Image (cartoon, rainbow over all chains, first blue to last red; front, side):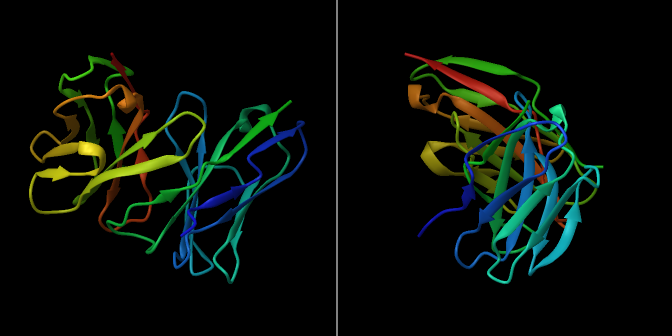
Length: 114
Length: 113
């Protein structure tokens, strides 16, 4: 079975632009979470979606938004990009939205802001 | 509030020697604890978890972790390190009523041949 897939793998944008990142979860997984990993740090939680509804949001500004589609894939949108948004964006899927199930991560989208 | 601390930025060990990567946590309820590994230019890969039961849990690639409730620790261990174990290791916690997973800052493990 295919793992979590993310696209694109790399992206270069300039300040003020908008970006959309995409994620396809493992087949059968209904929960998708998004994380930001800045170089040298651990992943920081941005959003979790389960059954197409937002279940949780981390401490990120309103410039960050996301949605989940009927096939459980997900998009992360970031508006008005800042230099500080440069990071690896990770998507993770799991079978449930809480509890002890581990998350399965994609290889991420590396976003560079010039 | 939940938090995770990994006190060592880097751990160096010789191949064949035992390794320990330390993790302490803070959570309001009963914790769900996880270890993940990250190789260069890759996402995180699940190693093992503690939910309940035995304090010593076994995971992938010969890794194990010891849960200590009184010390709020969940240290990752391996009896004999391999050069291929060299990677970035993350400890993570989730409280049993929540959805949010908190990751530590990571510990870089370097195994020398």
